[in-house]
Length: 198
Image (cartoon, rainbow, N blue to C red; front, side, top):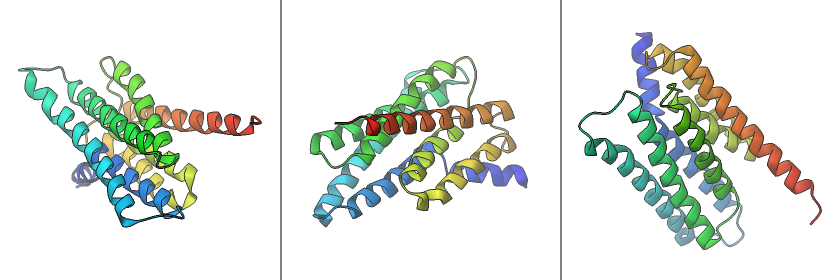
């Protein structure tokens, strides 16, 4: 029963869905803070989010179809690659339309953490579910503490993956450590940048 619950938890908060949820929350938060908000502007923002998500999902689902066989780590790598490229599409959209600062930082953080994840995964199957739960939730909590429930979801993933039999405890904890390190480094960088006189 515990294994089934952990698998269900992993499916409900899968990286592609959890990053989408966090992205939607951040878009709503950023849009709500605007003085000139409009439904059309919100719709356009969600359109770019949907486009990025579709591109990421197409890579995740499409790349494995191109190969007859793949190593065991390939699904995590293609998932991470798809998510990284999809998030890059969102980052480009936000930069192009100058819609605000939170989503580009969120996007850059996710693209940034994709690089070490892609380099580590062929040698050690660090948990993608944990990593891509910790980074977006951690960033949202940094933006506003009211997003703390999302951090609890991310923490739950650290336990869910080993209990589901998908990863070992060290692989799950490594996802947590890498994710926290990226969020902390981003916070430190932003703090140092804002402390520099303009």
